[in-house]
Image (cartoon, rainbow, N blue to C red; front, side):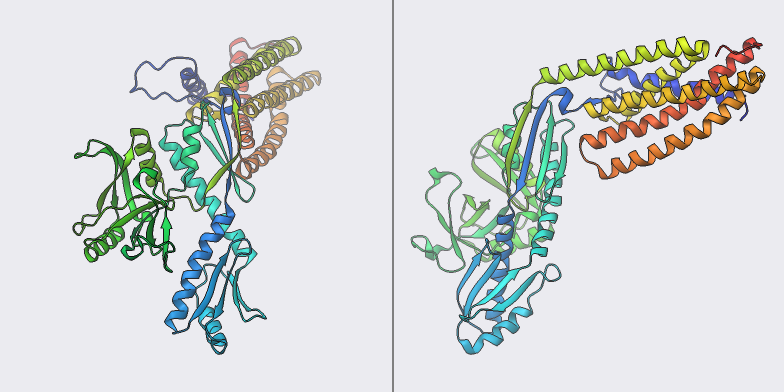
Length: 521
């Protein structure tokens, strides 16, 4: 290793340190102009205060929805083969569908028709015949687990879209176990609006109203009595189970003021598939009522006056500005595959976060001060160079965290302290090796060169293994664990830079300027 720095290398090292200092400034200054890029480190839930929500997916509802879809497929498959059935029933607790053949002689034909049903996954369901002649179609445990896994993955993305739409800063949304989602909302102490947004599935469908069952106590097969979203609009309406247009075909939704009534409404537009379906059903059913159903509640059921071919529409339902905005937000984000329920809620006050920040800063300052004194006492001038490298290390870590607008939590602060400890170890190793070479009688330049050569391989090896371990921790960890791993990973990179480049540069410049006969170590 050569103890020589070219002008370009010297300028590069100093430039990186100055750039790091500039990137740190936004954390302690106010933004002078909105047009200036201003990236800061954000404080996490444990430092800033906020809300913690633990959500659970309703797996029973998820299974029930799949069974309902399968029961319709069973009916269609049997009717297509001109086969009858009796007492078809869905049992979500046992994840099965049961029915009786119209005639025992048709049992084998029924089984053959059911075997042709499409499977969403391999071995999704089994078909058996019971002793009483009933035929049972049961979902397999593997298919239920796979559906739950897919539902959680889909729900996390939809939850993220809904929360982002509220303007919440740095929300943390992670999976916990097979059926739970953790939502952390720094800076939000009253999460009622978020809970209302996440507690609504927001599955919108458009279905025709059965005019022949308006006054029926029991609706005919294929028709359900659905309540009105506003009780003031009357009793339940008989609505066909068949979905004519699905809300998943929506491309946009927004809160608007109705030009005729002056009330808040939600406008929406369909994609090409939804536009075609909407035009077809409105063209064929002029004069009939068309229900807009949200989570099995009828928002409104206007009469179709003319075919709607533009793919645009508007929902009115006595909304205020907040409700119209939230409904539009949920429609844009998409429907949850299953309802989410809040099973745990905690609020962390800002005072606790301030106490945590104060304790962390005191720990950091006290630890840094003791290290500075120790290095100065034991290694003299080279100890002060190590202290300068240590300070630069801290500045660069904060600069990189600011550049990525990372969220700093208590584990992250612990990671910074641990990184500073590792940097101190590296500087001690270098100084001890130089001291050993001096004791062997080497000249100052030879001792510095040999000391760095012997220490460098050890420092690189130990930091490389630590880097790999923390990269894996970041990839597979969640929440605060990832924050801790990210801080350590950044700290290892800055430690190698400041220890092997900055410290050596400071020593080299001092040697070139003074040409000492002995080293102050």
